[in-house]
Length: 173
Image (cartoon, rainbow, N blue to C red):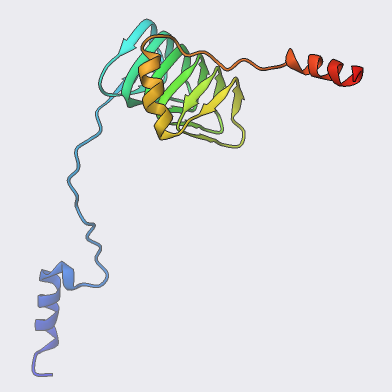
């Protein structure tokens, strides 16, 4: 109690770190993610390719190839295209096949009509998916990339024709 109370208040106010009621967030410097955006009122017909992420909130018809990047279809997005990307997030409506080297994420408001080939997939409750899903391992990815350059992606064909033959053979025996 050698110092006067007025003097101790002056020291505390000059140093915000010593005040337990002040909040100083840690400032980090990160580079912003480069992402192209197709807005709500835009309609694109044709082929899209590039080397940055893409956010679609408008309408796209054709083909989208962003092999090492993310494609996000926003809530207002309507896509009628085959998509080749590292990652695809579906929150809108997509009609076409998805070929992803990493993951597909279909959110609760998303609708997908088409086949999917990916390493990882996440489908939230409420999402609508109509089509085939092929989940492959990391080893298969390397083989599929070399084959996909020579021929387009084809959905696996169901073996429904073999079921009646097997039933007939079992009934006859």
